[in-house]
Image (cartoon, rainbow, N blue to C red; front, top):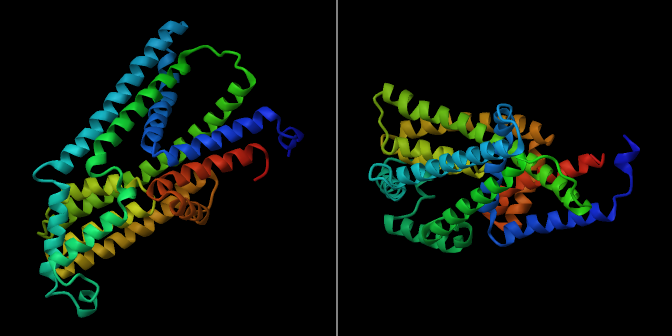
Length: 339
């Protein structure tokens, strides 16, 4: 362990840590996580692609134009993807509201075919289910900020965040400049935060894609081969991918939806779906520990503890941010040779 890593931190470094911690706290406290993540996503994509693109351009001005065009294309593609998913979930054939209503109807109709020990845990009627859902929504209104009337505001935050990320990415094209000490220290903090985001989020996207692929094969290929055609199959695939971006919780959400909709066919199909999803869940747990854990040099139990604490402090946004924040903190400690 080098003496440089064990040296006493300077006042500039201490202030940069304080400002970074304050900024990360305010992101959650002021409900700016969507803008923060959107900006980081655009910045990191430009950061990855720009060096390859810049090899074909000479001069700072030419490189800035190339990076600006790249950033604009990335923002456009991400925006198009977001609206495509929203369009699917709001379409007549894939409406999320219709899916929820279908789930309620399925549970109501399946009561007569379910074992008594399962029925005891279900609402007595469709009205009771709606009442329970309504009460849950009221109790967790602060955690569902992206739904309902807040959707427009969340989309605006995402768009603004992406624009800020695109503007910051223009630094990729500029020649290195001599920053003041605090600015240089803050840039180091930003670099570690961006690296933590890239390692965690890109790994989670990979896991979600794998999970979604298996789910799509099961819903769209395997079940139809046995002449089983579940309603809202494509919507459930989309829900699996979007929910899969949330570690642990997202998998439970998508699994619950698929098992409930499977009751539309029969109890045996529902049991088959449950068994399949248990296998996928075990695979995803292994992938989380293998992919995310290896990227940030952390065990699965470390991430779970961080997620539990952040969820208790900040709700759903804290749960989403926990792996990134934890990866950043651990990177800072590793930089000092403490872990």
